[in-house]
Length: 147
Image (cartoon, rainbow, N blue to C red):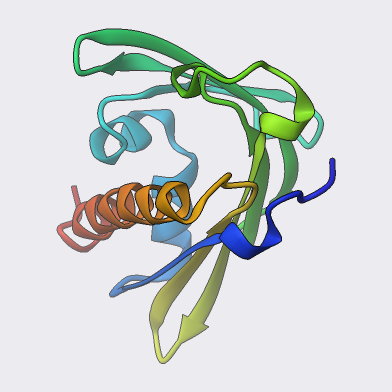
């Protein structure tokens, strides 16, 4: 897949006051993902090449988003493709995003750096950044509160 919109890459970073192992658990545990990702149910085995599916309801509308796990390096990096049925776009590779999530340790804290490519406009990039920031803030609270 090519990045047709390189200038519209969403970028979000969040520092979490917890070790990478705790952040990784929140990023990959379906039970925890649902707590900060708008109640989404995630189904995957996290093996590169495997399908990943997000199922839920947003503002009264059911959705079933899908993608493929591209990379899975415990406590370091997750990468996957993502297609949202809510976009209204045709389900072709050019309409899929690549989401990269990287963890780094800084003085005992974990920094999450997230990018999402292939946003068709500046408005879409801003929308993606707002959503990801909300989700990462929820993850941060979940991990730091020890829930």
